[in-house]
Length: 166
Image (cartoon, rainbow, N blue to C red; front, side):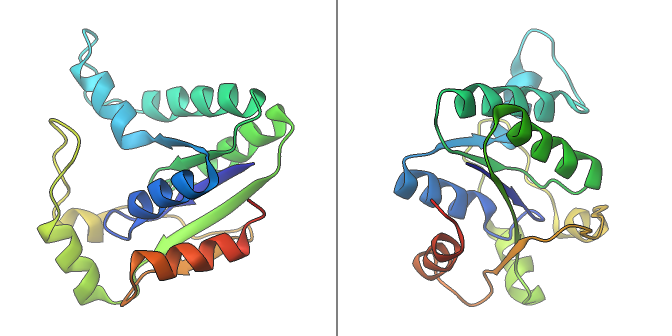
């Protein structure tokens, strides 16, 4: 199964993605890690444009074809990338689940964005103004919606696992 995690920075995607991957024995494909590696590579891609998503989708498809479940972790703000992730699952012959992670409490969301520290060398975290200005297209397809506001990781993970056939 391909679990496609989407949502703005600071909503808890990576925290939930890692926890879900560990609990389900799945592969965690984090686009932030891939994009930063591309920037550090001899190619010095900056901006990386769609290269991070393309590489992530290739890694996900390879692992799905090996029989592994994959947790894809990215902002995924555009319908075109959401469709591209679904196509990865279709090509690999596995089901997919679209999951949008939100933090409905603006104050909590802002505090998360402003206080978090990157765990990826060289990755500059977005400022709150960047998150607010980020282009994020409305959803046109059904999805699982997880609101992390005021909740701990274990509670959010339990809700997500209950909604997924993993």
